[in-house]
Image (cartoon, rainbow, N blue to C red; front, side, top):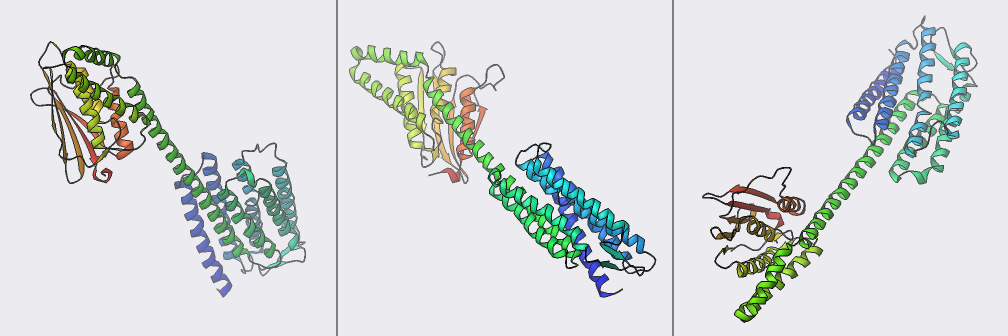
Length: 430
């Protein structure tokens, strides 16, 4: 076995390994769409078959008595490699969202490829372009470059088509096509005058893999961009829901507060002033929350909650008691986190004809979280069903998760009532 054959086997083995890796890559890695995935699987499968035919040609090369086998092998090899030239045209048109049947560009490429197949057939049955001697060696004639030039023309037409469609493609797609088409065109033109068949196969594989990698990376980048947009849209929806929740303040709460202030003006002017101040603070915090898109200090949320509960206590004397134990306040929360929790407790648990409602608001700091605990001795919490969803609680859960990776858990309270705990991860503290 001479040095040329050894080099051929080594190069062929390297190319076969590269093509198999590329084929697995095309099967496993996601692509922009199913069509593109099938395209690259077909492309790398054809290239793998081409490399295998190169192995067959190398195996029989130089062995007397196998001249016809060598000629057939060379014909199949050349035909397979030619199929890889017009294939990028289909991908280019698909990427530009053009109809294949109406494309003059595609018809020009297919016509050139058809001429090449005819010329290659002539070479198969004549000695006009190449000769395979009885000693089974391949010899080019002076007309051999005509065959290869047809492949170069296909690639040049593809380059022209790419340049004309550059505005329809993303920058990465455009660069990916150039990486495939330009080096391959150079390889083919050199191959017309210098026997670099193995290098040609290797060049096709590397260029195709580079092109595929760029297209996949472009797709992944667009997916990440879309995910960021979706996340931003979800945050905006959550903010709008918070705004709607503010605007949908219970009308009877406002009415009752104003009537309480009206009667207190005669009965207890100082208390009327305090209730008016608390109610004003509550309204101001509510409307500020509409425009709030970022986390707010827990101190502000606590002030909002104190103002709300102070107004409720003024209306429900001896029926509503509130205790605060909030030593830890140096962290941030989404707007309207604590206040809706206590409002929900008042709304569902305060019964003028029943026992007084007691609400406990506590905060604590653990090794990993800042925690807010709201307890009440009212009605036991019932999980939401499809008919009566807990919209306010679901809204808080959603905003906690999106804005600070927080969590909200609800459990029954020992002795009756409900315990709601909000956990804010340490990285969200201010």
